Length: 330
Image (cartoon, rainbow, N blue to C red; front, side, top):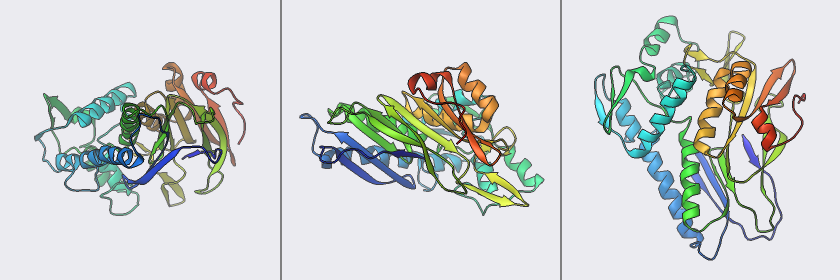
């Protein structure tokens, strides 16, 4: 949902890419005299991604999160540092938003057909919904030392923040390897810092939906030291009974969101924070989400459905970072 723009040819920029997390990653960086050869950089990057996959993938039964999810009510399990860090951040977002962000929402996503263990898309009946909602919520979790315990058969899903965390981890490692200019992207979450060899900035383009499952470039922004995440509801959805059901899920109600917010982009020095906040604001919607972002000084850019088109609205912090036209019809 974020596209890098083209830049001049003939410049020495190394490019790495490959599959990860059910999607892909791509890296562009400017090597220095201290930077190892590209093969070693690629190996370092993929070691980070492989380690995170072993912890957070809900698509493999041997991952740490899958083993925790398979534990019964009342069980406790030791968690690695990365997972405890992301769990703490998820709990913070949940508390700040009154439960609009929730890392335990996986059973509901599966029930509606959007999760890795889903049985197909569809509106569940009331009894199924009540059963799954009973085991969703951070209140069912407690930390005891390095262990996480659960009082119901709760399940964790870190997909809403783990890619941003991966971007931060990779960016930090590139700096340790002597890189000063880079653009790191993992499954659409990204961060850029420094400059290209010609001195120009890294530029990315934000997209706006222009029809069913289509994309169109809306505006571009320059990045230096910031992570960017966009969440939207116009790609992954199903229709039933004349109604559209998005994969953007409101844990407070146990069902997909119903508001007019089509997409929201968050810019933050931490790609992890941008990743989680874009999900949170997407759940809250155009009014509640904008108020939340404005109160907390977030740099956020909202694209809201209006009639047959869309209207863009950005927070004061976003406008300060990226001056441009606001409130325009798209």
